[in-house]
Image (cartoon, rainbow, N blue to C red; front, side, top):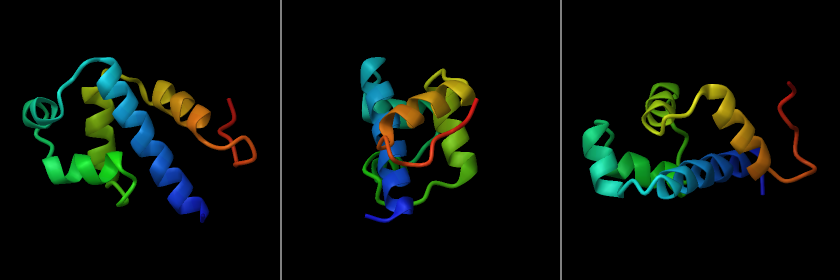
Length: 86
């Protein structure tokens, strides 16, 4: 698996886990935050590269800071993967 694919899948897992942890229903989350269902589906499943603006919109809609998102992403990446430094 290439680095890009690993990152995209990790981003998707973080978003999906946080949305579910906060009990935010997929369709309602999309509607309330003006995010297309296709876009969110593709991102959550690691099937496309999210635009930075879409990613920031989703992170904000989840109530996360960018630092919190980065920390969650860091935990989703394999141990031998390049890690974010504090």
